Length: 294
Image 1 (cartoon, rainbow, N blue to C red):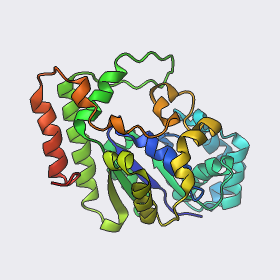
Image 2 (image 1 turned 180 degrees about the vertical axis):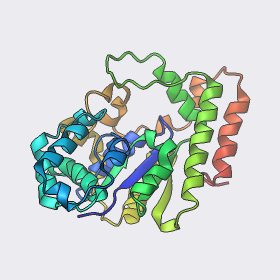
Image 3 (image 1 turned 90 degrees about the vertical axis):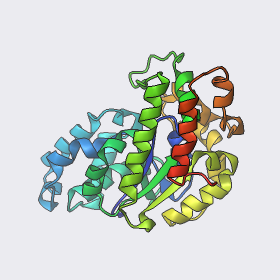
Image 4 (image 1 turned 30 degrees about the horizontal axis):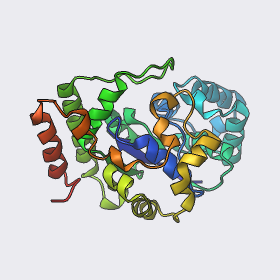
């Protein structure tokens, strides 16, 4: 069994859901919908060992806790699937226990022995905790031009959704700029302290403008083969519901082919905006962290 998942880290509205779905379309990779269960339940189950695995009451209690986790319902994994994975994998510690949960989704997707990934913007403020759980985890840092991120935030201001998971984002330009800056710097500072082979930085713009090349670079980093189904993600998402209906209202673009016009969209949306300092800061910060060339 894989000993550690990889994690996709990104500021909100940076394309992390798109990347998750693209990667999940690779037959050798599984990335479930976002749910931060491993952070929420680590303290309670950090001492898990083989004696807990052999105690069905302990297993049932753990599965009940997992099922109560926010957004886990979107995985559509029954108690039976999770229990079977735990009993099959016989986890000796909490890391292997959590991996059994991931593999329950892998099972549901009809896959076996895949590289497991996890995507959640929530993790940005809990990076040391992630490292404490999975010391040898790999990370993909997805970065999007801050000006286009702001444009995407602004577009959400008119979103109408009854979903209980609807994102609660600021629509103030200054707040968006500070959040984008702080989040990307926090990720950068965390990853720069790790060995280079454990992280890769991907520009959203590259993912959009040269999808296949960027995907090939990512799968090399993850140690698997490229799968052409990754380029057909939108049809597979529509067919298989890879993005849960509970969160699809603000992620509907994952049902459509790549739209290259989203790169630089801020120029149109903020055509008459006077806050040039923010837009300039977007470029400065990207260059400072070597996320763009030039």
